[in-house]
Image 1 (cartoon, rainbow, N blue to C red):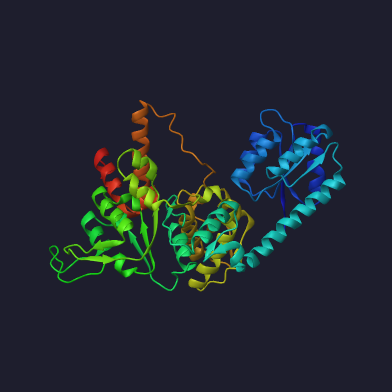
Image 2 (cartoon, rainbow, N blue to C red):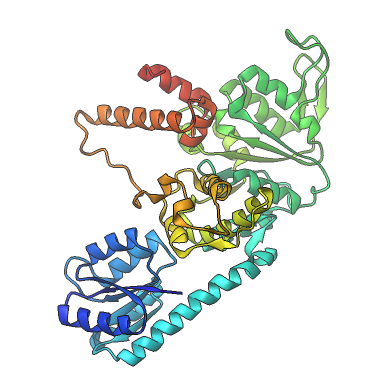
Amino acid sequence: MSHTILVVEDEQVQLEAISGFLSKQGYEVLQSARPVDALAIARERAVDIVLTDFKMPGMSGVELLEALKKMNPGIEVIIMTAYGSVESATEAMKLGAVDYITKPIDLRQLQLMIRNTLERKLLVSENRQLRRQLSERFSFEGIVSQSTAMSQVLNIAGRVASSSAPVLITGETGTGKELVAKAVHFAGSRREKPFVAVNCAALSENLLESELFGHEKGAFTGADRQRKGRFEMAEGGTLFIDEVGEIPLALQVKLLRVLQERYYERVGSSHSLPTNVRIVAATNRNLEAMVREGKFREDLFYRLNVVAIRLPPLRERREDIPPLVDAFIKRFASENSKKISGISREAMDLLMKHSYPGNVRELENIMQQSIVLCRGEMLFSEDLPLRVHEPFSEKISVLEMEGTFTEKVEAFEKSLILSALQSAGNVQTRASERLGIGERHLRYKLKKYGLK
């Protein structure tokens, strides 16, 4: 396999000498005299190793290291440093550099260092299949992960599973909040009892009350028979209240009463029923901000927020992308009767650099689409959707827009809403999910801005 090494050195003689030596060893070598240009090259090309000088004008080797790791943690970085800066180089290793080498460069030592680094990368890749099978170490009830951020999440989830304490899971849309909720349920003492979910954003206030507590025959128009609510259906088990931030204030009072007194009443009934359910709630909204704004009851917030679990977005845990990709390849290849053995280095590099506004759900969609359209036995970069080929970017700048601050914010909001609607085929439910807001909130914004 051909490996690509990017050499970053502001001294032209050194740059040419090191690049020439590595080229003779059979590596594809890319050159850059400026760290800024090196970042641009790394965005466009699949790079295995970056060999960078420690001190350079404009940006230090450590700053370049941090930017590269933020872009793609899979890129290995070796620091070249003068003897007097060895201490700083060891600090760089704490930030993610794989090794350092002192100047003047011993080319044979460099050759060995690069060979060891590539062998390590290969070993990690080959063992990924085995790591996925060790569910106790790398997953929690079907959650594929190996990042430190998710290890902390799963550690909290595992510790709280055996209790009956309410859990509040927060995170952006598509991060896997329901998966974690199921993990908490199935790892706990209630695993033999039902796991029942209700999505508060998908129902009106009247329907949501009936869904939660059930109703009696004749309670309202169309109620032709008695119906059990989700609390009753989840008796002894776990009730997962998704998008809890969308519950109207009037209904929040009733939910709070159930959590406090452990009794509820069906709609249209005065008879109280006892309940023994474990509550796991989830939201993509900032409930503390909603409490300050008077949109969410403070007492209910503290009742739900006994144990808080924040799911980090995929862009903050890029180490999870390779095992997730492997898992999706296996799953979708089997579902579509395709013999796809893996993914090319260039395609994986593109996936590692993508910003994932839709998080794991977006990666899942990308992989399903790519596998369905793939004609061979290996996924290549050309099999990936066009949006994955766009340059790496974490922020959308609106500074160049004309107008006041308020006008810029409104213009940005309208642009986001229109983009979400277009990508969702003008289906408001899907668009609201992509935006991370409730459907009612989206309808309000559409009316406010006169959008159709």
